[in-house]
Image 1 (tube, rainbow, N blue to C red):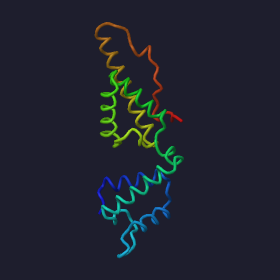
Image 2: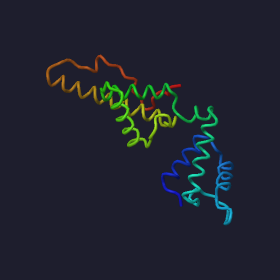
Image 3: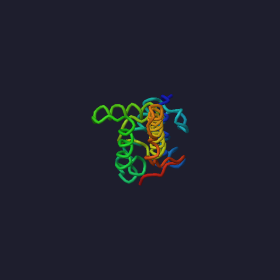
Image 4: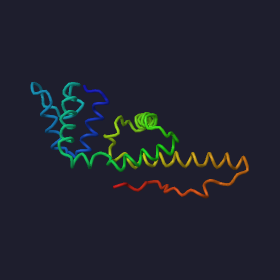
Length: 168
């Protein structure tokens, strides 16, 4: 039986490639064990067979740039995430910013690579970062208020909605 990580990866790639059930089951049958009954579920695969399917799906995604652009975040979306993270952390050096953002994305969204941020996760990431920025502003406002200063929020306008606008 494949690992949980392999099963998640297979299903994420299936979704990213918009594979229907018929094509998905053909792929399983192709990579499954031909000596026994045909494979009808990814859970019936071996670890080695699951690795083969993952490699095939990733290869298909890389060979077809049009599919790749629909499945993963665009450069503009990645830059937006990076800019929001920079605002959250206040780190001006690139290396620590990249390391801390990679850690954040891996821990909270199970994403290990900037070039492979699933497009469907981009709104959730941007929403979380906007929320962090808003909390940071509120923290500063509370400190200023305690110190007798003016409100910082009066000077900020953040587009903060439950479903952030998608970036093309």
